[in-house]
Image (cartoon, rainbow, N blue to C red):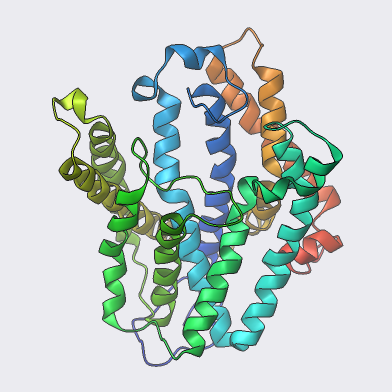
Length: 369
């Protein structure tokens, strides 16, 4: 198996190489988290602590940032978990199940534990009053944006349990995971394409099940050696131009003269699932096309993206708190928040993380040349 090109051969898998396109796509998904959370203070949502007055006069149906949020939210974590499942299967092949468990505890478990005492309390301080007890134990009520690490730990445990029971991910029946995603999508709360938020220590079953579908499908892609094709990128156009607008219209059926009903909800769930899978396959094809060769700057940003996502949310909230009263365009505020937070975190990664113990935990050792 050559890095960046997967041959269709489910019987034997050679030693894994480096998949530069998948590394870059995973980094892209992480960095979009900054954009996603920057959108929220320009949207009329109840559970975000800082909101610009502009959002009061722009409801979700007529808010460009709500549309940007929906486009990103519909595919970002599904593609992330799909890639995570792919690499889990690769690590199983190269290191065995015990090696996979050690690797995931080191790269995921340790950052999560550190974040429980640092990043999560700093984030939750914007949502709840800060006391010494809430600082130390606020993760019990909310894992904030680091819920995704906890989900990865749980998914790794599920994956290892399945493997120890003799389950393999090569049978064509695994393609049924695509329509299987419709049921958890149907169970999501109305008014959103994509998964509900789930930051609690005890996962919401249908949300965890939804993301697990993509994780297991990623393992299937690796073990079945499905070749990622460049032409898959064509799926992005119908996803964004057709499926996403149609899904949004069905989220408010009364605007179409339709009475809310189970039939409408099922239709919206199907369209939501179609959007997500089209976007996932489209992005796989796009990054196979544009990022399959090793480039230093892409590899560098890929390494940095993990740190950026772990630490970004307190900075985004702080930047929003500063910007909310600025007498400038909201579009300029949004751009400045994204650029400033990303720039600060890239600098901290370069000078305080990359060649330190923290960098070794997150990405493994990195040379200076």
